[in-house]
Length: 178
Image (cartoon, rainbow, N blue to C red):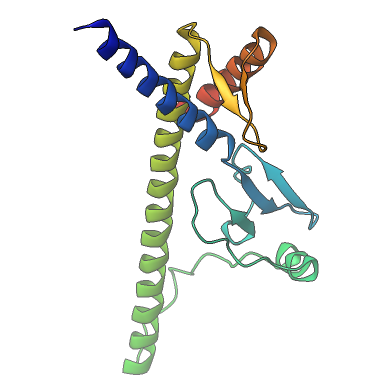
């Protein structure tokens, strides 16, 4: 392989690394907490935050509808539904049987939806993990890296910026790969 071809490959790897860094830095979670305040973070919300209160996920193309503070207060104070009573006598009419069958179908569909959502989140985490690892590997090569600011000016990343970016990428790897 000649030197020009090696330089071309190195430049492409650096460009891919910057794209990974840029895309991972734009990953932003947004949700409404229990007190009704909007929260922004680069990490997913706690497991006690209901799915309906998550407004934005990294990689989501369409934001979710925002729920107002009064609605979230009402939802937070709403009692949780009780578990179905399995000791109840068997229904005697066809209408009752159909109603129970419809409820079971609805529960199965909800479980399938939750499973699909969990799989989607796991896939996003795996992708974020891979992006962060790739960007970190590029950063650790020691090659001079430059960035383009909003004005279109190019600047070389100094040691301080490199250290900060490495710290951020290590946190991203820990959050998404652990």
